[in-house]
Image 1 (cartoon, one colour):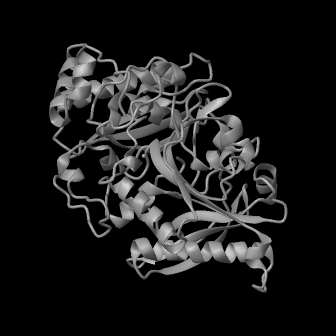
Image 2 (cartoon, one colour; image 1 turned 135 degrees about the vertical axis):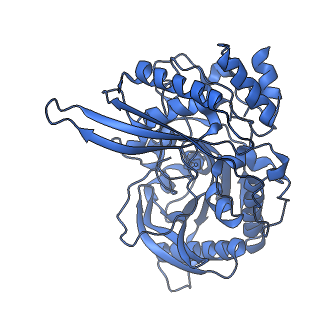
Image 3 (tube, rainbow, N blue to C red; image 1 turned 90 degrees about the vertical axis):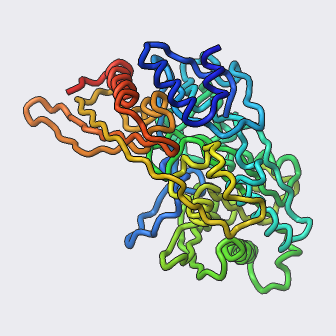
Length: 457
């Protein structure tokens, strides 16, 4: 009953009550239901580095990210969560008891929020703006889907889109496994082949996706993606003077440059050659926005083997595909500085945005001071930074703003490696007390030693 009360209380009251209970030794369990961004997927659009390196990544928008098994971790309710509009899958469908399962209660609580279905939410506004663009530029061509189940098979998530067997994205350090054959989708590309098999020839799929990720202002383990696909037949390019692949690539670029200008105004665009396992050729679109070149999305001409293996009568046809992260676009377009804000139920944030308004800019309503806590330890075989971030997030929730490695050295005598991480706690809604942060940090230290088998220093 206490945990349910905390889940229904909002904002500062919930956070203060949770902290007081923690100090008294009460461990509120997360309620069974409640409910966008990852190696890099949910990042805000980052300035392009001068020297670019070829990347191999499963999803179009930057790679996958970090977490740790829920075993031995008792999460504390530390922040309000966006109002739950949808319906989370039954707990037994997610917490299967399989040894491979590494989904945490913290992640389960996000399932069913469906931020992309909330018309006045920044994520929902961006989604609808993209839908509107494609309907206006290609009337009646694209079908939209935004309610597909987030649990998919490993075959859907990896094999069908040609992710190599040894790719890092398959690691439980990067992906949330429900069982050894099912995962929480890492990208909306997981639905590409099933859409093709169902006979869809032009479609947009939007949904929440999940990746174990680092903790900072631009990364979150739940974020939102959109996948777009369109198939062309020989009649489409006959008379164009172009071969099939060139025609598909040119049509793709024209469509996406138009989308960029629809969202960001009359921006300069440029195309960078890229690599994705499921497209060839592959590209990244960058825009010059406010004087900086920013990466917007990844795309390409669909691998012919994927098209012909899944779409009916696809021999001789061509298709393009793209994938983009909605948080990436929303953070830049609306000038939202912290990805955690998308999950806030604070009216001071939510009422700044309205369906159809792409001109709104986030106006900060408070800036509370951070609290820094350092933790040093000798690492163990069980330790990874992703595992640490998942553990810290499970305990501190959205009060954790950032986890940063600030020092690392190896003892030349015994070969042991020591890491020192700085954990930054900051609420977006209130000032934190020393007592509650000390209590959280004590729990982080003890769980890090117990679960990750490190030796604290």
